[in-house]
Image (cartoon, rainbow, N blue to C red; front, side):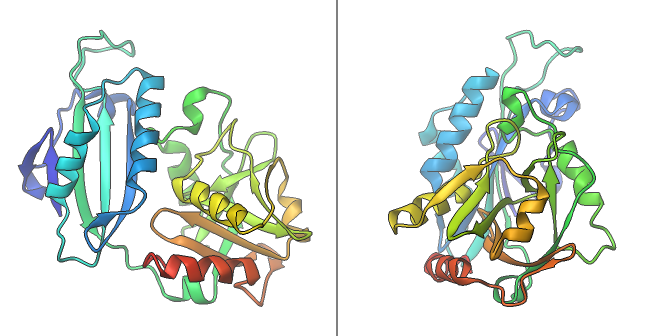
Length: 279
């Protein structure tokens, strides 16, 4: 692992932020997670643009992209075939209380970590998912940002312990499907690809956006919808996505099974993602 804290390279054991950093105190910050293949961060432009947009919305000061890119390149080991790059930004050290003073100096963290040891079968045979009881909270602008406060997802993810499920699907307080605990969700119904609308709650993932664009460029109809979990009973296939896994086909959610997973759309996407070394 290579860590740069405000541009200073540190050993992992020495990589610490202040107890009074607002990222630690309140989750007052943002992050991006990127796949790095052969020394190149995939979809850097889209990830950084989202970080910038989110920082503007939260009023977080942002260093120039050139500095972030320089630090990312310093953290990446070009000899490693695949690794994970994380960008983190907090409002920085502040005084007690929720309200920032406006005098804080942002904390910037860039680090790399080893590639996750996901099972090959997750791509080839698909995963098992389950529905989470923990609702996905929404209704505020920050609910669709990758903030440092992920307690909603942490609690949902805890439900998977001992369940045999690889991912959990979350619904909002109205019962509408929105996303997985760390993935975006897609299914195929009546010949079209559908994915939950995420303007109320949930994170519009970078890989989600790339998948939508890639499919549409090839003539596949992709629609964002509001739907309850019952919609999966009508689906001919289902898959989840994020920037590290690409996609995982889903072979079962609760009592609903897709024994022939991966389905045709999933296989089409997996072939593309193999060219990016993500499948």
